[in-house]
Image (cartoon, rainbow, N blue to C red; front, side, top):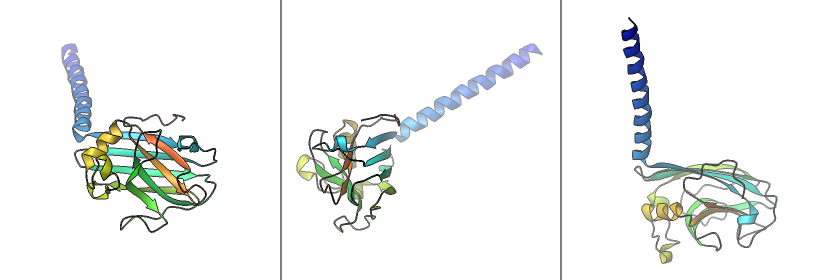
Length: 185
């Protein structure tokens, strides 16, 4: 009887370990990666002292060729006008690769409105959403893998532009694999 119980316990243990391994392999095969960043004025170029703040979450599914995002912001010193993901290192300002929202009518068809006084927007970025703004820097319209590589090496940032700071009031450099929700910049 003890042998049967031992075999049963050992079998249950092996099945549990295999389940964990299968879930890990499935996640790796899917290519899912996540980013969580905090937006501040200190990351803008030039740096700003502002009451504005935000959080940006990006989940990347390379196999499905899509990125799901959520941007929440508030405390801005003037109304939000637009938000984008740009291609450039943290010491410079760069070209727009993806429109997240705009109140200026300058985004591609279907661009959602930005909550002017703060709020949350979300959506999915697919190859069709990657614009030609950074084509001169090597990321042409629709080039999902090129855009993903730029994210991987930390050469993209998200920011929120406002009427008082048309160049951007809050910003965060995107770093793939950054899941530290309590990270301060």
